[in-house]
Structures are given as structure tokens and as C-alpha cells.
Amino acid sequence: MKRELLKSIRALKEGKTGSLVRRRMEEFRKAGNGSGSRLFSELCFCILTANYTAEGGIRIQKELHAGFHTLGEKQLAKKLRSLGHRFPNTRANYIAEARGHRVDVEKMSRTCSSSELREWLVENVKGLGYKEASHFLRNTGATDLAIIDFHIIDVLARNKIIKKPKSKSLSKKTYLEIERSLAKLAARAHVTLAELDLYLWYLETGKILK
Image 1 (spheres, one colour):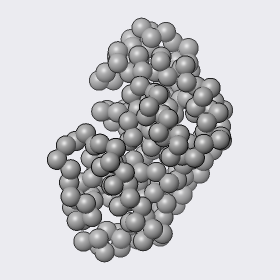
Image 2 (spheres, one colour):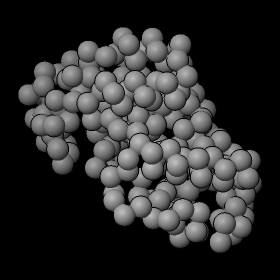
Image 3 (cartoon, one colour):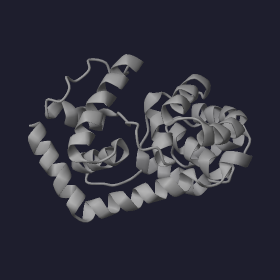
Image 4 (spheres, helix red, strand yellow):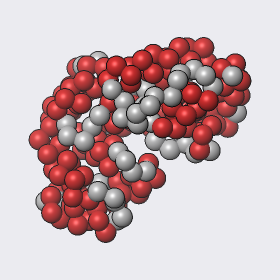
């Protein structure tokens, strides 16, 4: 089964999907080299997508970019509710609290390794677990971290690369074990972990998002 998955990834890499993935990776690199405001917008996007949808997060990010910085917590919650977010009050609270870390995130993104910054984000920013922190770092240029959600777990389990975890909530140990399995798959496919995520997402959903 792993051989078939590798074949599928390599075929995508050589076709139109590969071009889309490379374009998206360049967008991520530019985001990482952008302003502190751009970094914070991506951080908020990743806070929003937890237990929500990437499409919904993208839509809200486009509507609210400046509001992430300027709206009071109650105003932000009201706006998130009007835009259809499932958890407007909680996510508004997380974003409001995350504002206190903007300078640290910007500074550390220039000086720390992606794995070091991921640990710091998980420990210090409410609403970010390993998946969300990895998502933020991938969307701002990191290529060596895995974004592990149920789509990725399903494709890995189906191809007998991992056993499907019993719990939907992954411990740090389980997350890192699955990440190592993905790193081996990425090496065999001659792609980065960041690119692999986009290819696996495409295989599962037919979409290249972020």
C-alpha cells in the first residue's frame, strides 16, 4: 500500500498539482518574510481553524485581517459570530490574548528553529496545540514540521504506515511518532514535510488550501 501512495504522490508532483504546491510553498515563504502584522494574521487563522474548517478560516481571515489587531474582544466575538464561526467567544478570547505575544512571535520566528518555536507556541499561546502551531509555522515558511489532522491520519492508516490512534486527541509523544513516520514518507517521495501535507490533503480532499 505504501508503494501505491508513493506512486500517487510522485505522479501529483510531476503534474499540475505539483505546480500548485510549489506556488503555495512560495506564498508561505513570502508570508514568513512579511511584516509582523502578516505573521499575526496567520497565527489568528490557525487559532480559528482548530475544530473548524480551513475554508471557513480562510474566509474569515480575508474579512477580518485588520480586525485581528484592532477589534476589542467583544467586538471580535460578535464579528466571528456573524461570519459563522462555531466558537466565536472562545476564539475571540484566544486572539485577544495572543496579541500580547506578537512581538515575541515575530522575534523568535527570525531567531529560533521551527521545532523550538513550535514548543514555545504550544506552551504560551492559548488555542494552539502541536497541529495548530505546526500549521502556523508551515504557513509562514517552515518546511520540516507535519500538520497532523484526521485527514492525514486516515490516509496513513489506510496505507498501513501507522495504526490509527484510538483517541482523536493526540499526545505529544504520539504526534511526534506520526511526524517521524511522515518524515520517512517525505524522504522517499523526495518532498519536504510541508509539501507532503499538501499532497496528502489533495489526495484526500481534491483541494490545495493552506
